Image (tube, rainbow, N blue to C red; front, side):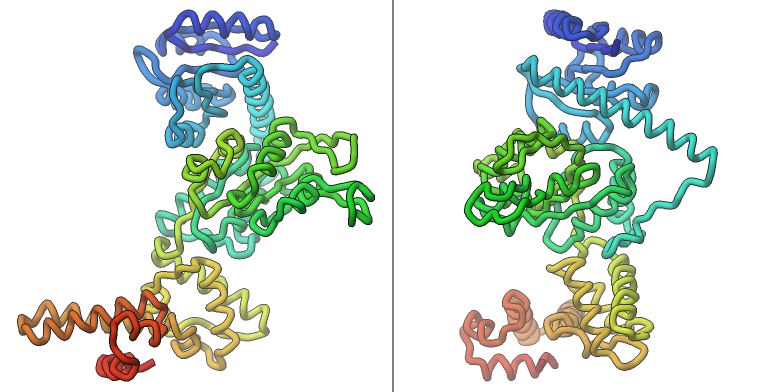
Length: 467
């Protein structure tokens, strides 16, 4: 019989929960404070703790931290009277299985409790099995570098990202990956999969952004031959293909509300039916979703279901843009150069100093994806040992020139108090700003600046920006 500890300073709520869970086959104890809860925990083993967030002598966060430190084999669910997504994310990152808001619904909380206990048992079994393996042989090294485009850098942002991957990979948690387009969300998803107990089972990626309402059901769940016009053969859906492994849903925020409802049912029940079939198929699939938009805002606008969001959001990782990765940019660039050399049969050894400076100052709006494409293109164009500035796309090499000119203007401005020079510098700063905004389209820039193209060319030439 599974043992549960309820921690709630509202005696009536603790009593109701205790009676309900006892009727459903659990052995239950109740504590009304943090002190008494620790007393219970020191004397008995509990499979799960249900802890109210607000207690008279402490709070749920402190209780969670202490329980995970002292009793790591005990699962924890936090209960609260108000919904706070930021707090929920923080608690789950600290090790809570889930975060439930009052009022409590019997079927929902019973389902959550059973899943939490099953997850904790699986996690404990995994820990025991890992310990046995360590005794038999050396622990295998993480396989992050086997994932294309995944580079474990040395910046603070990169180390934090790697730490979160290492934390969540061994669990069965669903994960939401957020970040700008091109930051490598699919690579992170693959890294999580390959460092999880599911590594030997399928990793199936699905682009939700390209799905129509008509196709989505068939792509997710599959269909039987003849189930609708055009169904000439039986089709296996992505959920079934990923069974036993990991399903990665990219740009999940683009799914229609109707498909979100079908997804919610599948995630809750862990069963699917192919379109046109009456047979249910059991699922054992870990779900990792990615989005480049704020799903909390999408929920407020009515474009994304809050209940589905919370099903997905057992753990979340935010991927920093490439511009925030510091010198790791060159670590990425050198890795992509190795890929490009192998792909193209080249032997380019590195990057010129000008190119390195350019890479480190450029904003990289397309993030890792843009950097990879730039390096591949430059490798193809380079016939010497080093990639030179001329092998880069015009907008990047020009951006480097603009940055150098801006630095010169700022230095001159600091030294000079001449009014004429100040006016000239302000004019050139305005020109450079507009050129950046229109991606160096001279026609557009001249129109915005309200000057003719010839005048713009002359002014650009005057500051050695005649690209």
